[in-house]
Image (cartoon, rainbow, N blue to C red):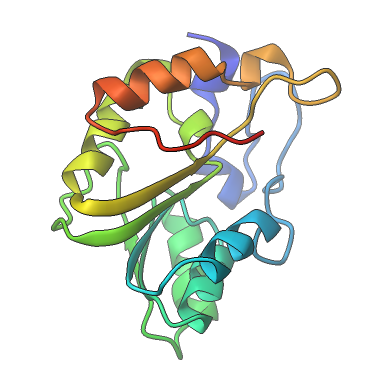
Amino acid sequence: MNEYDRADFKGVYEGKSLIETANITIVPWEIGVPQPIVCEILDNASPGRLLDVGCGFGRNAKAAFDRGYNVTAIDIASAAIEQCRKYYADTAITFQICDACNTELAPSFNMILDSATYHAIPTMQRRDYLTEMHRLATEDTVFHLITFAPSLYGMPTSLANELSEISNNVESSGWKIMSVER
């Protein structure tokens, strides 16, 4: 297990340090707006039932809701879900505390959105996660997995995911890869 596999993704929402070797006590992926790539994806698809996995403070979920999607947003961090319920109380977004590897949700999502969740799942649980996402899908579901990739000036190797590892896990959990983009 590497240090990132032991990261405290629940605790960072409560002001605890994300990883042992760095004093990261704020949510580093929170940019105050929905992720631009997510907005592009949403704008180029037809609204339907969307599952936002690892929703954090719900920015992507709200962007989807504003575009006409019926949104269920999940996160393992109860503090994040509590904030979402407060911020977006005037919406019909369903926010739930769930373990992404065993959601207990009913299947039938048209789109599943993973914006920076895959790499937050411990390495040994990633196939379980992808299998659970496949269980929640229909034969027409589109799953967008947005994660860290190694790059010369990007993420350190211990935090990045090689395409071969992602592809192997995705295909062995029942998904068919339609496209990959850097």
